[in-house]
Image (cartoon, rainbow over all chains, first blue to last red; front, side):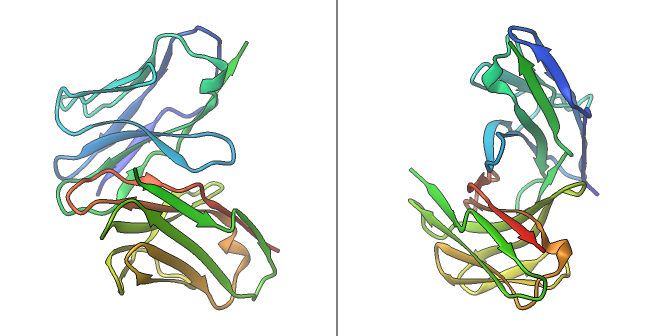
Length: 113
Length: 112
C-alpha cells in the first residue's frame, strides 16, 4: 500500500531561520506529491505540488523537489516568518484514476520572533 | 475561481443525536467531492468520495453516510452520533482528470 512518512514535530524555529521538513513516501504506482498547510482552526490549503520526477514545486518562498531515486519530497524555505506557523502535511495520490490522498501525520511548525 | 463552503463551522451534539453537515462548491461543474475526517491521534482519513450525483463510495465502514443530491452539493449524515465521531470534518473537491484536491474551511464537531 501507499504511505507517507514525515518528520515528527513540533519544530520551533526563530524568525529568518532555514526550514526543512522531511517527507518520504512509498507508492505502488507513479504518484503526484503535495504539501498542504493548515493554519489553526482552518482547513487545508494546497501549498505546492509536483507531478513527475525532478519537478520542483514552489509557492510563497517554499520549495520541494520530487526525488524519485530517494522517494522524497522535502519541504524547504530559506527564511521563515512568524506567519508561517502552522501544521504542514505531505501527501501523495497514486496515479491516474486514484481518488484517495494519502497523508503524512503532519508537522507542527512554530516560528518565534 | 472555485470556492468551497461548509456549514456549520462548529457543532456540539449529544451522543445519539442525528447529524447533517453540508458542503457546496462554486465555480466548477461535475467535480469529484470528498469527505475527510481529522481526529486527534488518527490523522486525516478519507470517509467518502463521489464522482457524480447519487454516486457515493465509502472508504471506511462506520455509522456515517453521505449523499450527493445535486452536482455541487455533498452532505454527510448520521442517524445516531457516537463519541468517536468527534473531529474536524473537511470537504474537498477535485476535477476528474486532475489529481489535486482543494479543501473547504471545515466543520468542528464535538459529540458529548
